[in-house]
Amino acid sequence: MADRVKKSVSVPSELDVAIRAAAERSGMTYSGWLANAAHRALRIEAGLAAVAEYEAERGAFTSQEQADADAWLDRMIAKARPSEGAA
Image 1: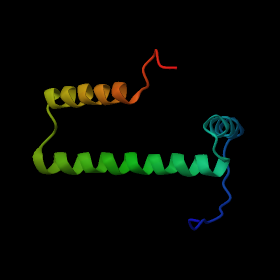
Image 2 (image 1 turned 180 degrees about the vertical axis):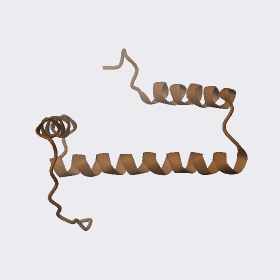
Image 3 (image 1 turned 90 degrees about the vertical axis):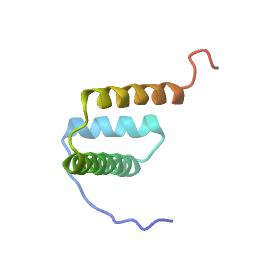
Image 4 (image 1 turned 45 degrees about the horizontal axis):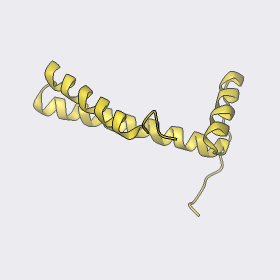
């Protein structure tokens, strides 16, 4: 089992309700859902920092490069989704 650190956090009541519901929908515990959300946020932050570093060294991405990346991402998301007709 992975090491765990117990923390006490405060969240607004509306956020608590939303987290509980999201955790339940995903079959996770409240703590597990929060840890997963924090992990995702940290990966996004690291990715944005990597893009900023790349652009600082090589210049900003062009509009065409951004459009190509958006199109690639759209294809990957579509590929990852189960087909509509699958049962």
